Length: 394
Image (cartoon, rainbow, N blue to C red; front, side):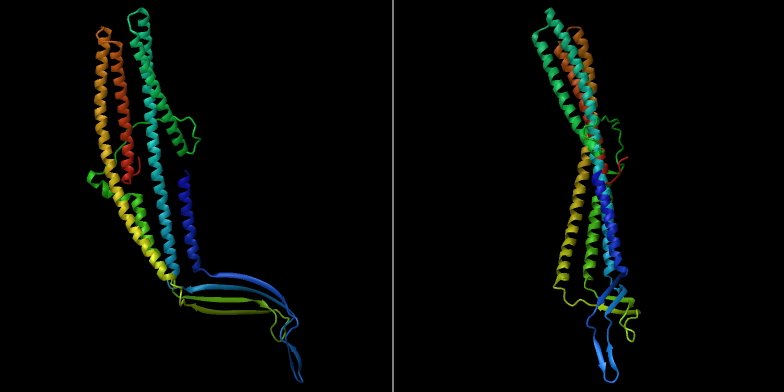
């Protein structure tokens, strides 16, 4: 998924940042070559000895320059630690992105299962209503049924067909969402299979929040950001430390007495100490900025802790409510089945009308849809609770 690829690319960028920070440990080497024509050349005349050239007309030079830091008083090491902290943040961000995608995919998947089954139930209801419509239409032709019964059945059939259209529209929407998550064209036909049999996290109720605060990637990220801010402060505090460096230059050039035109090996070497004296208050103001960054990181830890605690409590409560709703829906389905059986017997004996039988059948179909919805909400609730406490989905 693009967001995962983006997060993984951030890991590679962080690894490159570590390599870039470590490069300060190594020397820099450059090579150069040049030619210079001088005219007129400097000369010196000594009485009784003659005139001497101090430089040749044609000057050639080829050299290699090597420059490196001998010691920078912790600056490089602290920059490397700061970049390693960036790498830890990037790695955990990948897992955070995957966790959020897991939730989105699970919700879409179970919603699609619900919609497919709800459409199947609605199709059964429509078929039953059509049979009733055919039945009452024939009865009306013989004069044993009224126009009201026919019209009422037609209205119920129309409502059921409209409900099926709404369900089908929702199914196509969820199909597009799930196809998008899987990287497929949005209109690709998709039929999912599965059940709502999921295992709860298996953590005692009084331990859910402590477990979440320990394992949620959002909390891990918040703590890492606080550590990163502290490392940033340590890096800034040494930004004005001295730097001890060395240089070596070696090569070949002409212009040396007594033979000015002869190419001669040569070198220079030395050490230097760079000590900042005044940085126009950059260090002081940078420390102020980083201290604000530390304060914001601590506030983020507190805010994340509160959000996670609230989220876990809400998901736990919703899951318990879903379990109760499943039990109640099962009871309603059983009651609706018994009511339909009694209504069928009464209808055959002529004790009730066709509309009364339709009421019983509609009540049964609605109770089945309610049970299906409760199971869907339970499955999604298990996913939400598992992710909210930081446990992987099994």
